[in-house]
Image (cartoon, rainbow, N blue to C red):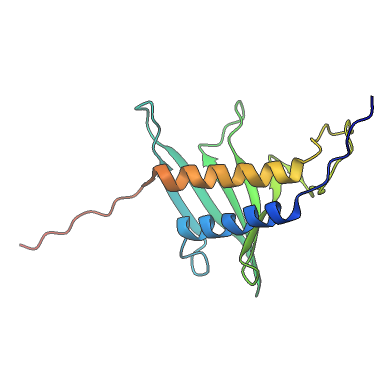
Length: 151
């Protein structure tokens, strides 16, 4: 039985990356000036909120490399951990590393040595979009500034 070859839907992929840029900028509007941003994500099960950190790894004139992780990091469970290249001139954001896997190709033959899905690159960028959307919907401030009252 012959399998149909997967072809990347480039317009859909670029639309996802462009939307991810906007999501990152809403979550971390001071990205160009600050190196770190931490916020909570409220859970629906009345448990303590999860924390998410966005950390700037490198800045260039047209791009910024950031790391997005869910805290606390743990050796016994897997939390989302992604490195994202922000292209300011193109207003686009693309995952360049996910859970220590990097350099995603647009299309993989299947099966392959690392068992990547045919559309692995599209999937990790779609997951970034879903995770960022969750952060935007359920995000909460971690450090609430103390209210100063005048005497």
